[in-house]
Image 1 (tube, rainbow, N blue to C red):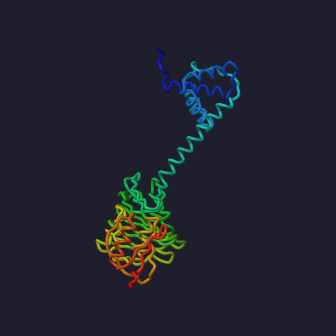
Image 2: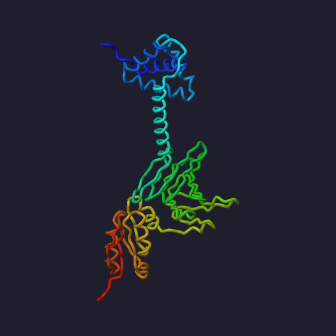
Length: 324
């Protein structure tokens, strides 16, 4: 039984063929190349990869491989590049670049759909948990760690590294942290809410005229607008816990108005909750609900507030109960 040709031997032979193809093939050598390609299914792929490298002008690499195969491959003659091999190499190179480009993009541009919550570990040991319909892009360098929150809400758990500050960019708002856990939520294009669960962060706006940062310790929250960074608000432990309960798919609604609670549920679901009466909308509700259960929330709210629930297409309408 003939010994199976090794992968390295195939790659070396393919490199030698590509060097020869660049110089030109005689009819007999073209026939020899065709026979070599047909001899093993792996040969065409190896030839295409070698040609792709050649087309990228990485000729030094090819020459090194070809030199090691000297005496094994074809002799050096003048010839033209066969169109079918150039086409095959171009296809392989295009697909390879497309796959590499998509993998690189997907690793640094992370998003969630409506109702989806994702926990993503980052390269430095930090992690980001994306809330519903959110998107971030990650840009790490030797001196900084930058995450851009393009939309939505994200919980950051930051690994300590004093040599590389961790900075979240949300529009013109900047949040810098070292070894901490905090939430950034974008409200539209310009406002951002920052809540610190552990550690401390500095918040400022990236403006033409430099502005001092505002320090937030654990249990503090601020809202940054195009005009200013608001005075931090002190939260209770239960309020901090409620602010990050969404990472477990839970909405803790204690103390919120019905309108606020409905707006939160509508962030997670395509079946939206509508409050038809302003007086009803201003009343407060309590309870913990799963983010994907707007019907359960509506039923519980109706029981709490003596309201009525009806369904219209993809809407759940809460309205005051009509007494006879």
